[in-house]
Every structure is written in C-alpha cells, then in structure tokens.
Length: 85
Image 1 (cartoon, rainbow, N blue to C red):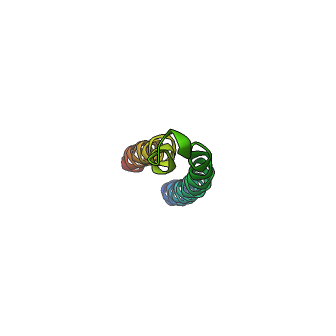
Image 2 (spheres, rainbow, N blue to C red):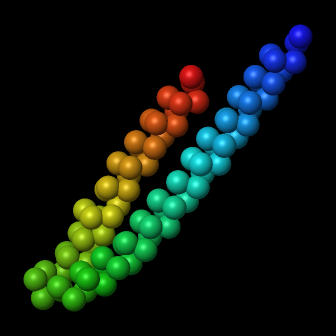
C-alpha cells in the first residue's frame, strides 16, 4: 500500500521537470525575440536618424529591452511561486 505515496512523489518530480523545461524554453524564446526585435528596431532607428542620432539606441531600449526585462521578471516570479507549491 505504499505505492500511491511513491507514485505521488514521482508525479511531482515529473511535474517539476516539466515546469523547469517550460521555464527554460520561455527564457530562451524571450531572449531570442528580444535580440531579433533589437536588431529590427535599431535598423528602424537608422532610418529615422534625421530626427536625431539617439533614435538608433532608444528604439531598442524602450521597445525591446525594457519590456523584455519586465517580462523576464514576471516569468521568474511566476515560476518561483509555482515551484514552492
């Protein structure tokens, strides 16, 4: 009759592994999309260079890097809380 307890812990281990893999996948996807968005927005900034040279780095900063940092913090908070329960 001890099998249900061991099955329960094995299910928890499988769920924990799945959560870790999902967290790693989402982190890698976020990094990849952020780098792609930075490159695209940098080229858009080059097109708008006549409005000021700072457009080259402000577009990627404000529209890719800062939102990515916020999303990453949210992911860490979400997975930190789900791993505790």
